[in-house]
Length: 485
Image: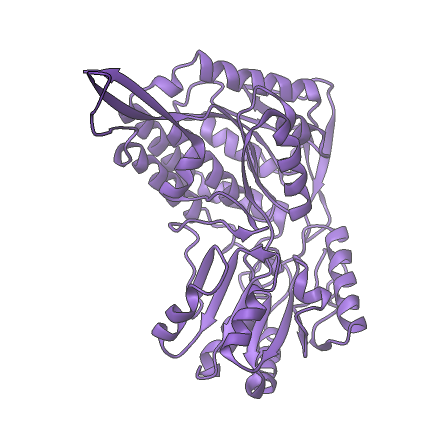
């Protein structure tokens, strides 16, 4: 099946490929060419009800939660092997739907995450015993079981659709949960291609279901439905707040990875030959469409002019264009409305007095596609809009500071706390500052682990963690069983 197929793709519900019940479809768009892709099914409320019922039945009556741990481990590794076998085809769909470069569309990360989650099935204790206690003349033993939370509604985002989806699917499977995945409206075909791959495995029907559609109605129903026990969402802060509020009606467990406005603190003893590329290329990664982008560059005032000059030279040399070209560093933004939003932020930076030193326009040589040049503002104050709000585009704000204490204060003066970085000559100096930074992850000298380390944020950047044993807890309930000896 090619991504430009004229025959509609189908959703995967209860182990069966199915069209939308009302026969509706929609086309998504290749952001690099503006060509339509699809068509994909446009699910109705009845379709999501069918998917929830399939997941509920698979959890309540199916074998998956009750399989031996060894069999769960085997099937998850089988899925990882299938992902590896079909990695090139999956990446091709991701590139066309997101405009990501081939490097960013690699499936190596999702495969590793699935394998590590599978290994947790055998390495983590799903039952443990407490010390016996005497009560009322009897000796009592308590055993603590880690039980799967139930049916999970998984809402990944579009910027790295397979990576983000696997970060949710893998721990849910490891815990013994069943799930309904609602694909992002912008990338339905990537998730349907993933479903094709998982469908080749021995996973029992109904454990994994995928629905697609343009709009928010299906996702809202998933959040509100009383048969869904957990919602995991990655995306914008406003949507995350709405999900948390709506999930409260049924007291669902909620896992949220939301926005970021991450600080990259440049200390006064660094070698700018090393620091400048790391600072500058933060605007280039995924065209700035990542919540962990180091979009605030904090630099000693005495070094600011030289750092900015170097950063401008670096971003100006980065190729913007066709993501299929191996020389391209910066692909398109996902949609025209996203590019228009970036332009409004650039206008606000100019209005509030920041100095535009690079970019700030659509590339004149690219009339088609939603491209935007990597953009740098100098002389930014931390109270400006471009320093406080998540732009989700290739825009960097360079903020001067006078002391390390001030740098820490500026870094923490944000509603977000997802990622941070410290550029330093001595790793010890960086480690001395880490505990003062209110952020879920802190890199030193550009180091970042998005495959093995827990991902999640402080403050309004989210609730819970993804990846590894830290993610597994979100998909498990603790059950205390006490009996007399």
